[in-house]
Length: 157
Image (cartoon, rainbow, N blue to C red):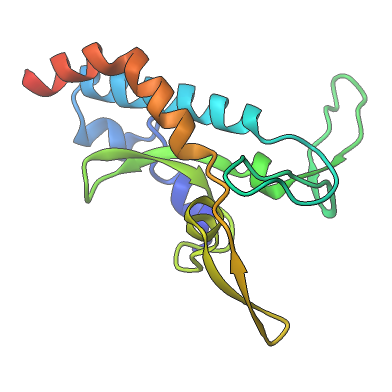
């Protein structure tokens, strides 16, 4: 199962998640996830070259990854960034929380964590040090303040 399929099976609209959570908890976690996802995606800008360390990564359009077109409006598929387009939020039953981030590279690849937190990667036989370029955690911190009271009230109940 790919990272995308795994994420989609735990969307807040699925029957599985609806059966595991009460309506209020599901609403608050879904709201937090949706707002954080939107803020995180909007921080990813299409620009050439790498971003500065400590800033959100720049994204690049890929001919191998396209955003679907609209048959209704007559639009053709367009090249897009997998990092930006495959960013989701979903329920994590193990931690009873919301998980927000890209569903690329598979769940065990470590690629999303390496971009967010930094680390090392093996590219073409060479070990490369990657400096952190956080984009989801800063968005989460901003949105948590906005939903904080609803979340606290839900957890108390």
